[in-house]
Length: 137
Image (cartoon, rainbow, N blue to C red; front, side, top):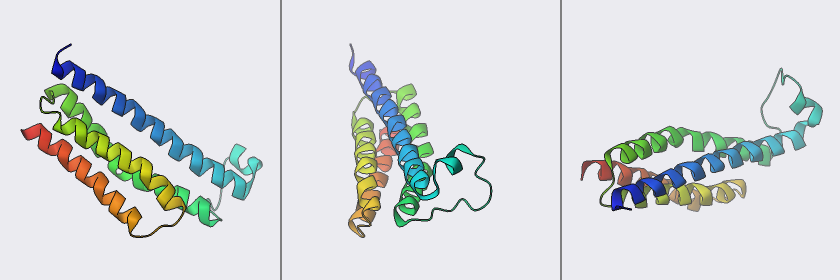
């Protein structure tokens, strides 16, 4: 297996892991919302006020929205790297940095840890920047 196809395989694994992380966000958010509002609300049409009631439900919802803000950029950059090849491995490193930072971000946000959470978010942006740089080198 040549380096380009090996990198593409790793990138596809990262893509699949990012989908798993998306599902984790959805399940966390849904779990906390259901604890707040009950299973009848969750099974129903969810008409009316859908804002989270508890602190944890609110944090889970905001963390999920935050993930979804950069997720399209990650997917686009990852697919571009797969199509063009990432001979340096630089973009692969950036993609891994983004994913690990997004995983670390969840418990930091849920626990309400300031500053470190913001730093981890910035690290995830560095991962995206590395992916962009890899497309041009």
